Amino acid sequence: MPNTEKEKTHFTKPTCASFRNLLKELKQPVIIGIAGDSGSGKTTYTNRIEKLIGSDLVKTIAMDGYHKEDRDERSISGILPLDPNANHLDLLAHHLNQLKEGKVAYIPIYNHNTGQFDAPVALEPTPIVIIEGLHALYPELLSFLDFRIYVDPEYAIKWDWKYERDVNQRGHSSEALEKEMLKRAAAYKHWLEFQEINADIVIKLYYSQIADLAHPQYTRKSPAGCLKVELIVEPSESPLPSLPLPFNLGAILSNNHCPFLLSAVPSIFWGRKVMCIQMDGMFPQETIANLEEQIINFTGIALDEGISRVEQKCIGSSELSQLLVIWRFLEQVNYKNQL
Image (cartoon, rainbow, N blue to C red; front, side, top):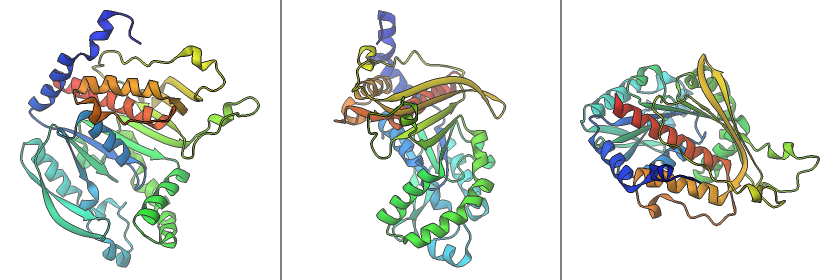
């Protein structure tokens, strides 16, 4: 926790007001690109950014609307949406340019329930615009992006999440999904994976490995879906004030404490100096709630709007990763304001 009066003033209400005013007074919207394969968890990070910054300041463009073919047409042609030539990236670039100029853009909409395209929707520029999709970090879009995120789950996670979404939620057949996933594997390597080179943050997701650290036997049971998260972060040129991470060190010595791993290692990634931050297991609920509150105090939205009331004693590492991603984005906004 902060231990000086100076540290305590980092998240005062005047700072909150100035941040929201800063966003509203920007001459151009701040555009975030979030790229990754289908079912990789992009929307999870998109929703978290919107929730903690404020839905009145954030709008999202789903890039599925820029596919050239609907579901029936793809079933005939056999062309995967992962192929950049199967998407109207030139139209998206035009729309991003319109938004940067303060103009309304008419965004195409893909309906996942019907597999067809709905009528375009008018989008007025907001202080923050998120584009989310397979090719969000493609070269022809980079000049419009102020912050770039790439989400990369391991194959087992990608399969489980896509099965849950496409089969259990959207009603697609499991046989068709299996064929699609096998076909997509090489396409992903060919057309999508390289985008991590262009990212300010790469988010790599694995199933938890925390039990492997026990000696000799793990005495807890991690909940289903518990993840190990690796953030590869390019440091900001304009860092914000400190973001304290509170831990009860005394409680860590008890046998019933949440099992977790947290490390930060300076590294080189594709020729760039980065911090490689790894987190695994479950973090104390009070730690996550404290970080949420600090960020919400900084962004200035109402606490009840931003904080998810969670009853669990321990919170998964993915929650912590979302907060760190948002903080790094806020640093980017601060840097953009100084240019």
